[in-house]
Amino acid sequence: MLFNSIEFAVFLPIVFLLYWFVFNVNIRIQNLFIVVVSYIFYGWWDSRFLLLMGATTLFSWLSGIFIEKFHINNNKKVAGIVSLSNIILNLGILGCFKYYNFFVESFVDAFVLFGRPLEINTLKIILPVGISFYTFQALSYSIDVYRRKIEPAKDVVSFFAYVSFFPQLVAGPIERATNLLPQFYKARKFDYTESVDGLRQILWGLFKKIIIADNCAVIVNSVFDNYQNESASTLLLAAIFFSFQIYGDFSGYSDIAIGTARLFGFQLMRNFNYPYFSRDIAEFWRRWHISLTTWFRDYIYFPLGGSRGTMYKTIRNTFVIFLVSGFWHGANWTFVVWGLFHAILFIPLLIGKKNRQHTNIVAEETVLPGVKELAQILFTFILVSIGWIFFRSGSVSAAFEYISLLFDRSLFTIPTLNVTTLSVFIFMLIAIEWIQRRSLHGLFQIESFLKYRLGRWIVYILLITLIIQFGGKSDTFIYFQF
Image (cartoon, rainbow, N blue to C red; front, side, top):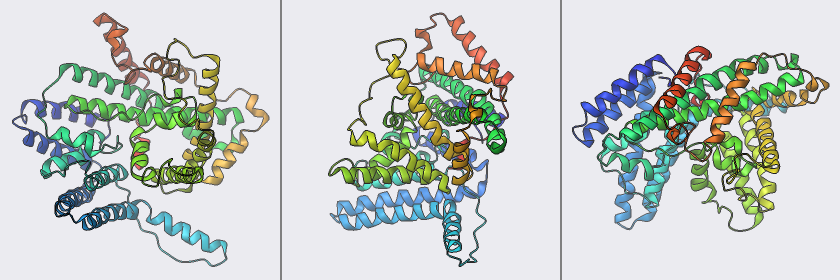
């Protein structure tokens, strides 16, 4: 079920009313209701994969119970074996569905290079929607129980609700058990203020998805599918539009997910913090897909040693993180090269010990950025946009060819695209988020800027009208494939 679909527009208010006015008898009943509606939500795509998600959830819950049992008996080694077994099992399921064909095809291609073709059949596997997200969420629970950062869930219903919670089930944020699971143990009361702002965040997310991302997709798809015959200026514009497409698509999903969760009394972690206002690559990665970045930091980078030790080890750990991040995004070498590209950009900052130089808000004391800050923002955006070409292309060779075609005299010609209206929408996005760069989302605390209710309703009606009038072809969210 898509957030930008009629089905979800019907599903959400029905679930909301039942949750607060019918199943609010006690926490356990509410949690059970969340599990049921979450499985309906997920099963809307393909009900066959409900069993897979249920198995992942059950094994992870049981692992927590046994890990705690062996900890109590001072048998840390066996507890570690149980935790490791659960990790291997879940990663095995993920690897089978997401990476089996990739490894087989890469293995065959390698032998072809040496003149020894192999006949190995790939599997006709449909990738379950959001499998990487709920798998990582289940893994973090097992690891945190082993590390004794959280008590194991005794209530299986609460744990199933934690893993399958429908707002963030398919594309995050990737929640930690330490944050989300305890919220299923506490009584939840309807909060009018939180719900109203949740609706605002949903509206802002829909604007980013339907107006920005879906309209950018029309242009991006047409250019990338025929890039050999386009001018360099058109290719550059399409690359820029893809940068806004993927941001509007993914951060839009996160806004809708976080806003929806707030309607039900839950606080999800922030996943985007205006990343295109970053002044270097390190700052960009502190602001982009925060839930995944911090997941890799806490469960891979730190265990490897992090930045402790020699510079060589720090650089090695950084490359590992970015390569794993690229590989997490998809079974294609384009994603691996994309991760490698960002690792290369990150290393000079690391060596110069400048990777933490921009931890404050850009233009913190002023309305507009200074010349230096603006140049840093634009340069970082250009680098990120080059990386997105690898992310969007069908193959590594196509990505390099696309980039090479940018170095042509036609770069100084007028692009053959009619993008006036879309450019206005993108300018709106940038302007609103710049004004709100200290806030949680584009419409957060709008009362601070518009004191009168009429003014706020004019903004809401304007956004709804734009969504209805200029909504592009309704596309699935990009990160569903991950």
